[in-house]
Image 1: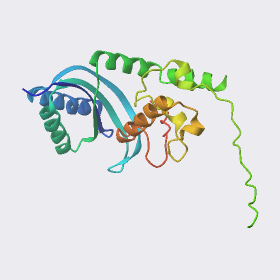
Image 2: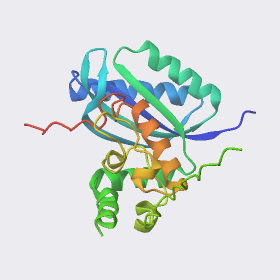
Image 3: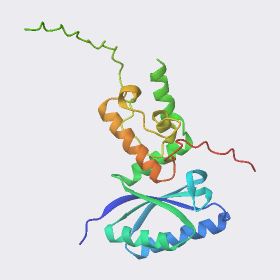
Length: 126
Length: 91
């Protein structure tokens, strides 16, 4: 049996789609992940954001985050499936130590994006 | 025998040491999604500001560098023009 890891998956969907369509894309990939041995614990949406750089001539994307458990084969297959789908314009996967903590931290970050930056700039100014 | 010229020694002035802002602020982990924080450590062209200028200690600088590189790969920061301002949401 392969070692199971905990992953944070960022998935960027084409922003030209409607809400329903992008939710359908998310749902489709969640189903794929579950079918290939992944176990999605948490999910979150970051909404429509401007991208750091153009991807396929698109300047915006809808960001979804998934926190899932799985082994290397799951991630490999998932990335392959992302690649087949034109509507997923970018994906990014990292290993995180604790899924719940990562999810909670993200919710805090989403609510207050300036929080840690303000903390540091206070110290820089002082 | 020629006389040896006296070499002038350049003594680098010691700058007053400042504590690392990230350590002082009590931030332990730096998340690549926290681009508001990361943008303080990149130039307008998107380059990572070196330690001697950013004033971070070795540990924090490594964490920041790693987070910036991850953020670039996740399309949150630009490789060539750094931080990208978000549009104001209309509707």
